[in-house]
Length: 167
Length: 93
Image: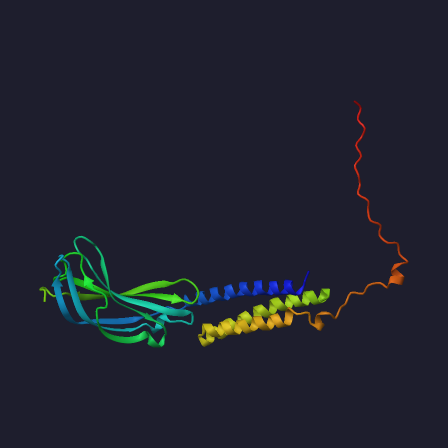
């Protein structure tokens, strides 16, 4: 009893237990902070808008995305995944969500950005409902902490409309 | 390691680890650095290991005092107890 191995074992076990506790506390400290992210998206131009041979509408647009997500970063944040989705209603589906652009933000320094881009993923409807369609652009984000639960939230921007005619 | 040394080693191990954990958490929180917290805690665990795991001389300050053989011989040795065998009572048939 109380040999070298016994003491080493007791120490490692106790140290690991405490490590788990301080990681849980670090995760808990995230909840004390309430983030206030800001985002703005402008549709600069519709590059083309057409009806595919299979009958689905497809649109390509140029977007200007500016966001300040720095308040999402705490000392326990590993990275933030952010994506921009177009959301609209059709007679068939009450909610259509199409991801147009996404990004992984690795650090607080790069969480304030402005990007000028055409849609990274194709904006294709299930059918031909897009002419003159009003849609929302929603910025979703998933915060990945170093320890603890991943959490997500979003910011909805209203009042975008597609043109009446194909071009 | 003697009895007092064992108690001392165990208590030191627990107190030092908890103290280092508190220091590490506060350092990490104030500096907003998770890495700093882990580094401080890792250093604390290594230091605690070096102090409380090896059998250092200061854990042996209260050695057990055994009687001299000459003194011990004056007293009767404890006899090993013979196992008690339960005898069956003779039963009449």
